[in-house]
Image (cartoon, rainbow, N blue to C red; front, top):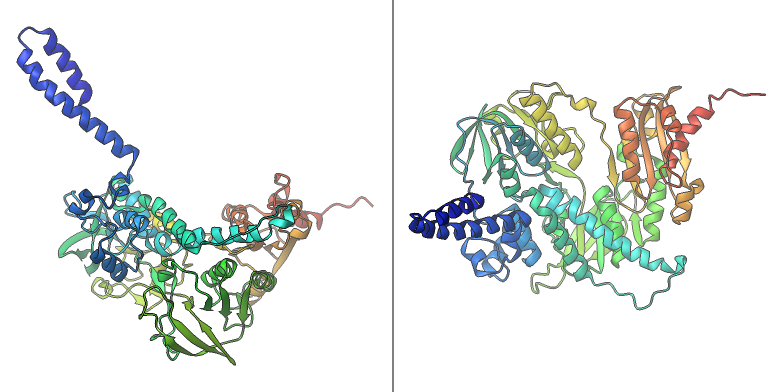
Length: 579
């Protein structure tokens, strides 16, 4: 538009009879310049509309804004997001604008509609849209789902601050002497909110529309085998993707718990003050990550584990359980094992003073534990209620999720697929949800036959050291499943990089089929175990044996050499001897 105006202006200027036309086009020219620069500015800064969110212009167009008491109440009540500061305003304007309606005209029939805007809904709708399908996503709560808003993203930001605190406390070991070290917990949590808001534009409605998918903000419900309703409007689909995620599973049979002001991961990252004492129900990944983090930041933390050791219920490696528990205990975490909670008593609910903590007493075993923060981390439940599953003929198991075949389809309605935490019997991990979404697009729209059973899915607890697993993760698990295996172990006490980093506690264990180099799984306890496990996952997926990992040249010095060490053990057992 801009360059066209320039050409026309020059023509008019050089033509004796073009003066009037020149004058008119000159005005259009300046408008084109303004439009060009405005467009360029918007492209350079996708979130510019929300970067000055407490300006009157933002309020007039219905955006979230700082200092609005009604909006603060709404954000807390509807989305459990507070405080409504600049960072949370940026977040909300990206992932749930106060008023949102797509400018696109709905299609008569959609190739794919995703109900849910977490990893699974975003990946399936955006990938379908990018590839030319008529695609839509329905977002009821916060786009980005648990991962962006109350899971992976804020937890890893908090973990980084906790790790920094640990590094500071160990500085003298490295010849660095610090004085007057002070923790500012408010600043820690501000950083969490700031980084979450920085990542949010990738999951925004604008980004999804930009990928070619329509966005409907509201609750979607199935009304038939190939129809659904959102905001009073009926939409038809060829493929529907249920991507409604999950929620914390809170025990219903503990006296006093449901009446207590307990916390889950859905509220934890709103904290603005450090709780002096924290009791955690559960000993899974969320529990361990937050236990170590809050202990390092200064809380007195107690973890209540109903099992005799960590990871017992899933057949996790006993040595890994012992190492991790000892490391967390060094950082100040107390464990109560073989313990059940008999009662929760609310001494003070905290409602008399918004800035004050509640006070609770947890009876576990023979102990009474008082705490200001009671974190419930006892598993997940699928969000499958009020979705119209019955109307669409979709089979499910309450709390566990939708029942699928190996191609990701509902066992009872082949037009409906499901991904992520709302599915029964799959790992509840963000990367699993994203990969399932790719499978849906490939199978549902491209006519492929990808299988869920072909997935090799690693999992990581981001403690320090990290704990990473894939496949059959221990001799114990193999025994339970009746599989004969060999286990190869390389300890970090002999790994030069780990020694030089003063982090030589841990190991790599690789489980193979008996008398074979076919890898069935692995457990790693090490710094950056989550990065190291990917080499093993890829090898397992591509049917590369342990022998090949032993022959693969690894950079020196790296902690990942421990993987090669397991491979060399396999090779060395089969060496030709020369004596």
